[in-house]
Length: 400
Image 1 (cartoon, rainbow, N blue to C red):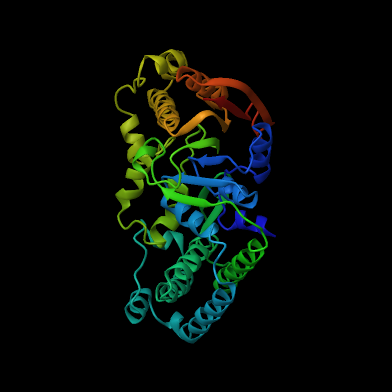
Image 2: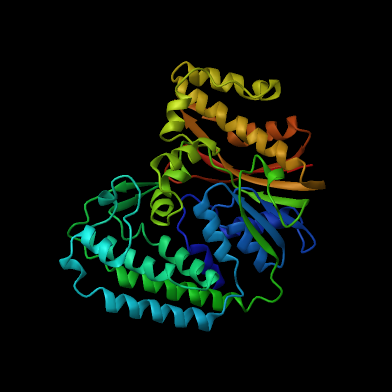
């Protein structure tokens, strides 16, 4: 099934394809509309729009999501060529793994001309035997001449490096664990993934007249700086980060460094500073200093009382909340320049509780939209969040 493309990259939290169809229905979206997704994530909106014959552009500041998304929309790839290439990589792998466990990691890297990922303490992330094997597969992928095919297998590999790592996926974050006695079958994990992805592309070819799609790396608070497929959009279907200190940058560190996107520890921290909701490493240090002020009087009217209540207990978290909504305001303001008249926006958001202060994200977001001249036809509270009392998710619907 084509829906399996959504599973190429495991992203927690992310929203369901069913939500895209719900937003499409309540906004009367047709194939004549252009859709913008300013927080791409796992590419759910873009993939579903393509399936429905709707043109869509996705933006994300995280390069991992962008690389995955750019492959997930390439339904014109030659399936027979992908299968041949998969067999070639597997053959080279089988020829090369003989005797590698007798080599220490440094000698292995010298022999095969590969480098250990520049992530902090790589030995915490992967056992030596596992790291050798995934580095070999990466080497053979990098040697491919066809760039689109190389990108396809690259995405398949980086999507699995966490599954063979010394981590648990404790919802919603990664935590280190001891896997020294586990059987980690790198070959099965990686090459099975490639086979599934190839089958998914084959199934995608059954879609008649899919929508045009574009995935772009960039900051959604500065859309005007990006080269997009369209200048104006009629719909926005998205789910920005929630104000809960979850860092998408922190959770994608294995891919950022194993995939050679970053090679310096500071790069991930610097990216997190720029993200909406980023509060890891240097971002936390910055937020612990001074007082984060509202970006203007309008945001102040909306956020001052909430942040003042939090600040009585924790200055850092008050600054975090203010920064979060300051950046959301900038994103909505910037986006407005790229929306046609009567355009409709659907934002899936979750409320939070910070220092026992309720953050009603849907209400606050609606106030931000209203302050920028949008109307708010409806707020739909869609579900309670599992395991958390009084926490829920909602769709804020705003109209230009």
